[in-house]
Length: 274
Image (cartoon, rainbow, N blue to C red; front, top):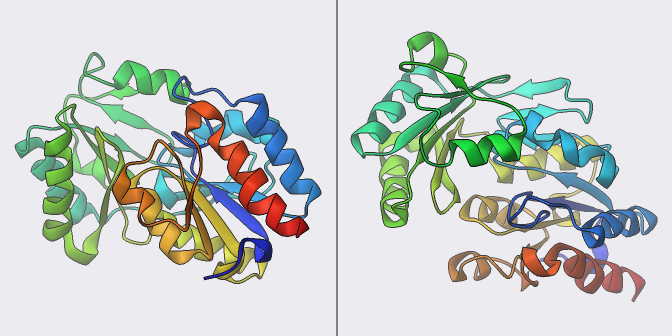
């Protein structure tokens, strides 16, 4: 494991990490981004959000590195121009949509540019619209044409044990054809097997010509554990569950108590100055 003082890049999750539960970037988080730059530590973000749902972070955080949207399914520049897209295999996409519907979950499909839902009044749709700051496209069903462009498929339910059980079942069903991880207690995200946050660590390491061990990662959900395992120093948020915390090097405060800013100060800047 790398020491925190060896870190040259911090890769951060967004929801539950950089922003509060009300999806607000605190003054502390914005100041922490500035302090990282001044210390010579770059900042990048990756999220289960589609790229357009992260555009509001670019200016206040001074982001200049690629953003990993849809858990790495779409890599974009800060101006939202697409660098790379990793689609789900269409056959796997059809299998997983049918599986999630049989499980009793609602299903959303994201393409490079669209978010598609079957019922605009279904749970979490209005909240997602608020977070992403753009509207969903309503479809009667997900056709093969839709699924041929799928970057992320999401199973949605407020039955948290069902989401957890569906995660394990989907992983067994899909094998190496797709990645299935929870991005929230009520969201199960399915992506291309190379579209995951662990892969984003290696993508950024290659682009910056640094070692993955020189990258720190911070997050709060099971899909963040994938990047924890590939980076040199990992930080779990205080609002993460114990399973996620156990996979990180250290734990910071919650996103409601400026945990991101506190992690930057305590674990990265202090170590860098030592």
